[in-house]
Length: 151
Image: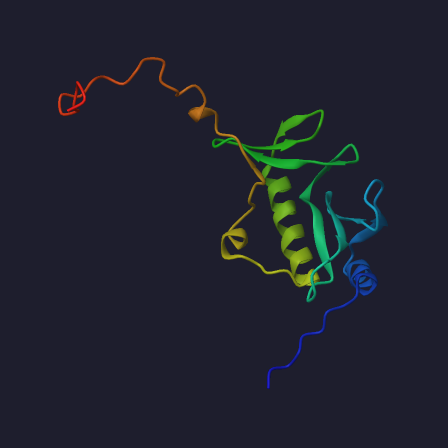
């Protein structure tokens, strides 16, 4: 018989996060949500709705910029830290901090750790500028093997 895994309550999870040196504070604007921070990176957790989990992420992990959790934006050639007011190039230190924070948080909350995420930091927004403006202004040339005249 397989052993059942212990799923802590949301309050117990908050205590475990505090014991692991995370700062846990109530989050303004998110009912029953808590702001979890460590090493300048933060995420908002809410109690999980599905059985088998203690918490779910209300916002993805991101660097704290002037009290706001920034999103990680990938433009193909560079990753950026994006807030409602700023868009700054991400540094290697920030990417390492986001990756370490996310891995440790997932381990404590019991979320699945995916292989591609374990390789490095994954972005939650992708905006490749090299694809912008590639729409053809001219119609495609007529190919001789295409049927003309409805036959």
